[in-house]
Length: 149
Image (cartoon, rainbow, N blue to C red; front, side):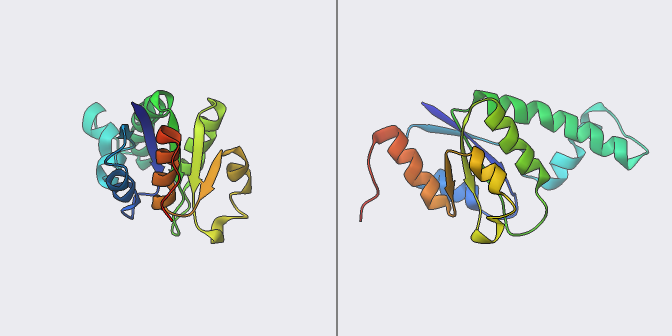
């Protein structure tokens, strides 16, 4: 059984596409909480309210870090998706953490981010543009088969 951690942008259905495409593979998928509000508010919901927004965010970030660290550490492969919108510092941090742990890192982004992410791409074992390419990588890793032409 291969565990794959799906990190990065939360505004599109790329995770669903990978999970659906890999439904016949022996894979367990994990990842961050993708409900933006729940992710932002988890710290204060569990540990108590904060009057200052900095400390509100800090509590959430620390609690989410526990989940993220565990997910990346337990994964055999880490996939990090950089979307078209927003500055995704958390995705870059996750990619760096996975690389530092020696995890097999797959980075996914469009051509428009190629220059900005050159160092992240250099740490990855594969750089792709689509969820389907991730599924094909997983199939190759698990079964040694190439996509049908």
